[in-house]
Length: 164
Image (cartoon, rainbow, N blue to C red; front, side, top):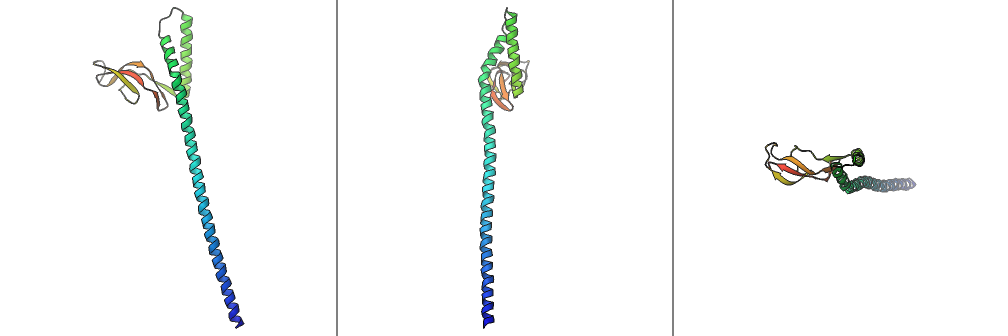
């Protein structure tokens, strides 16, 4: 009888250990799953904030450059106006050249080519004309230069389109 009781106690201990291991495994699996979900959420948060930071910086840069465009327009107009004071004109040209160099370093490019095909994403057509010198839907005159920052259009070029 003592043998049977001892065997029963041993069996109960084995069952209790198995149950304890199963419970520990379930708790471990639950904690592991929770950890992996938290890690994924944090990674997504980190990626999202990095993207937002880049977008915000780009928008701020575009806003600042767009605010300066009227200044470059004025300098361009002054540089192309007749003047009797050559030193004054030379100063305006130097200032305009310096500003264009800064824009170039920042990745800003002009949209002002005559003879290119009209593209409504970068051109704002205000006039059309019949002109045999140009093919159909071609920019024949630029009234106001447009500017791009990389691929982003800051201001479309105001143009006249031939044979539209």
